[in-house]
Length: 98
Picture 1 (cartoon, helix red, strand yellow):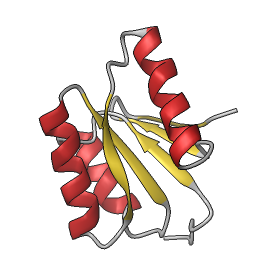
Picture 2: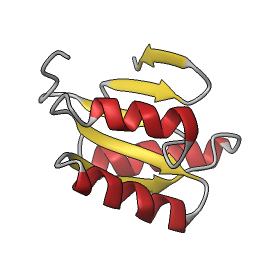
Picture 3: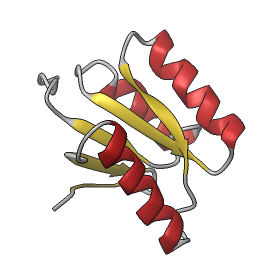
């Protein structure tokens, strides 16, 4: 896997299933990870998984169906970590942010 130490990766649905699998793989790249879940408990579990993998990043609460939630999450990431470089959605769509 390529070195992504200068990248910030946003992974939605990272608390289980495909999102959790993407998080696990991306933890090996050196990227800073932001994994999202719909609950604080899920976000806390994501943070624990990131730390257990020896990676940088954190879990955050996000409701992808709520535009205000998406905007708030992206602002929090930008304010605390930096701009998102890569986004990965648990619905098997992987893309690049503008």
